[in-house]
Image (cartoon, rainbow, N blue to C red; front, side):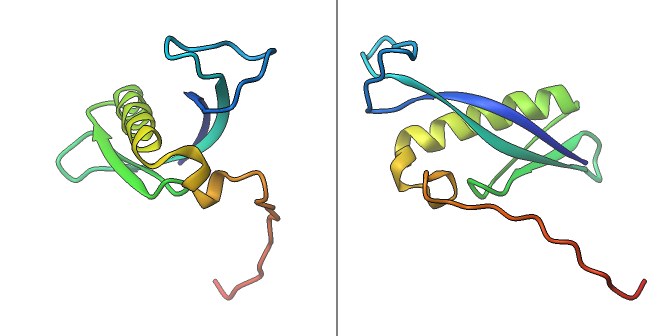
Length: 101
């Protein structure tokens, strides 16, 4: 099951139309993907392909919160401009394939 959600993070750029966080950096909203897989021991494993991070939770809601927390921490350490999948230069095209079933 795929679920998309938006994560608001701080960036170093200053935009007058965006909210400012407590450190004076502009906030930016990015879209990341949450891919859920039922865990063998119960609960859910959730993976974010854009950031290549995985976490888990007892419920889907808890797994989402854990992923948001992990994603925010990862972005704060690595820096948004250093994450290729979230750069402004990225282009996405969905493809359909016909395969033998």
